[in-house]
Length: 309
Image (cartoon, rainbow, N blue to C red; front, side, top):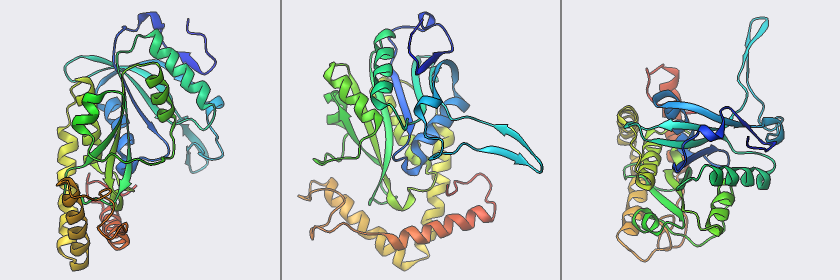
């Protein structure tokens, strides 16, 4: 029995295979393009899963800051789905198993929760730990999404990390866990998907595809992404139509493309965020236009097309 007041076993840990990779996707500080939310839905809707255990909500959540949703129908409350932070045993498309830590990022007890997760990693003899999240960036939707990679797996960081800043970043609990894993010299990699900031509040399928590709590169796991890719093509087609019909939007996208391409061609810029004048480009207009466009698509009931959150 794993003795910890934060974690409740749903199965005996002795029955969980040892030596599996751990993949983590927690929603919290930033989830641009709904990348992590989409991955969580994708895993539980597409792959075979088995619950290993759950974390104690009452010790980790500020319910007043993130109030749970009850379904109210006319005169009665008919359903309630509590928040979830869980560890699951999952099989990829080829049947390879991995551990999946998913759900919310805790509001409280980061040190204790991190220690619990590190203990689980040790007990289950996890081989590698990989986590993903996504942030908004002034990059164009017309280019492939890039990632920033952290951790101690130099093979992954050297081959995949396209933006390598030196700066202070707002911490997440997974940053803390990654930091502790590095201290323990345990293999770990964190992927930050760089999402066009004017699409950050939408459910952008390509963000989820990029995150899953990153996980595959770090773990060798195989994920079927045909549905997500098709949704992404439809989403981008709609955005392209909107931009093509608006000269000002096209100018803004062109500007973002030029800055992005210059950076990727090793132009001596400090980052893809800045131009030679050192100013961060804004795209408030493009954000407003595209959000309006997405809202209109949602109102008109455009089938299963991606919609704004």
